[in-house]
Amino acid sequence: MAAFSDDFNRPDSTDLGPGWVEVSGDWSIIGGRLAPDNSGGSTILRAATPMESSDNFSQFTIVATTAASQGVWCRGTATFSSGYLWRTNGSSWDLFAVSGGSFTMIGTYAVPVVPGDVAKVQAVGSVIKGFVNGIERVSVANTSVTTGTNVGLRVMAVSSLRFDDFTAGDVTAGVSVPLDRAAVTETAQALTGAKTASLGGGSATETAWPLTGSKTVLLDVALEAGTAQALAGVTSRTLGPAAGVETALPLAGAKTAVLGTAAETATARPLTSAGPGIDVDIDITVGPPHGAPYAVGPPQSSGWKAGAPC
Image (cartoon, rainbow, N blue to C red; front, side):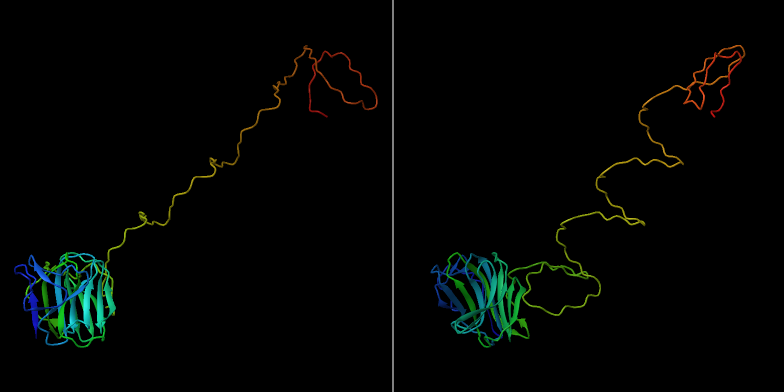
């Protein structure tokens, strides 16, 4: 299996050394980093020694970036007229199949590039993959290019771009050859039954595994919040303002009400029987006569008694 790497740790020069072929553009080493020229067109840099098989990969570290096309190439021809390109334009990562100089996008990962990102493209059989920082971001099946042993870079000629730590090699049984040194290191986290990570946009689907337990995810911020009330046989809720208010009166066999002001008032006079020898005047209202006229004489000496009316 073939392998090739370059860390560019040598004096500034426009001569990259025997390990490279400048297919187009004028490349140089500046401050221990690989730099393209400032012509503004696409420039191609190829490793001088081809890989031994068409199943190969290439990767580099983006040290300084801008909104310009920059990427790595694998399974290519000597002039990169065919092969696979994994590149970023500054705002997203795109995987291209290139055949006869015609570029066809076959996958994308919509995340902007940042300085320090490690880009890797790999072709094994019909499975073409793009990686960012060692994490597979795109994996597609494509048979546009089945053979090609050349690897390298294809970038826009912008002098502010800087790259480092190029590595390439053959891939056997889905495993790439050992790398010289890791471009990015992270501390492994112990797994305690589950592993969580922020997922990017899916570019491929696979059959879901059945869950034998529970799965937790982070929920979005709730639009509304409410406190749950324990149920104890009844459900309570807050009533709106009453349209009218009345005081309930207890019922005790009778109904009372406030009476209006009397139209007339009269004082009751007690009735007392007259004693002997006492003259009492009685006013009598006499109705219409019944036959003969009535005559009213002087009061008698004996006492009168008022009885029930006839």
